[in-house]
Image (cartoon, rainbow over all chains, first blue to last red; front, side, top):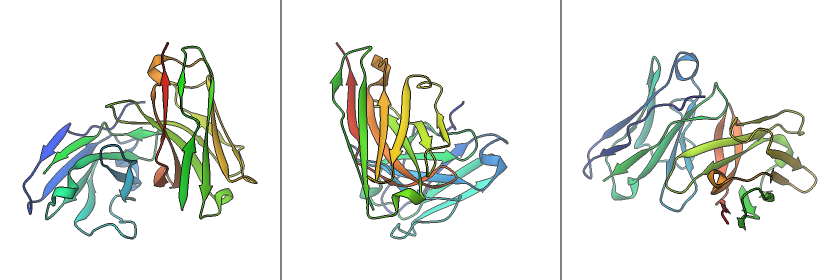
Length: 107
Length: 117
């Protein structure tokens, strides 16, 4: 099973917006609307921040938003804050256990 | 909702180990559960999934035939029995609640398994 493709790193300044893409195939990301995103700070467990492409769990800031076009899902973080500096992972329903390789966000 | 893993330790190559996950704060028997892992400095890797009553199970190719996932709904516990351990099994092992369609809405803090001589 192949991992979803994410850039290794992205960066932005406080207050700016950034977008992290997650590219899959017609068999996973492009086949349905079950893409999730997770935020992981160093030494901590991942935290679900987006599910079903664009839905936010209760308590997650509305600065986090998700979208999808074709085989690529995207996570956008607006109004960047220092605490947003973390690793971000996407995953997709489809082939069991499909995760992206992770993107390190530097603020 | 709380998930707490335990049992991680240093084990020799070829050895066996069982890690556990204690669940509380929700109706454990209503949820599919997964084990995932993260090797030092690496990304997330899905390991195994089990359905609500333990009849449907699947494993990553990397652990198939060596790892066994199980659950005890009377004890609100999830288990991962690992055997024939290799150095590349070294990782933090997380249990996670599957909210459906392989989306994980609650994770434990993880337990570190180190395979080394």
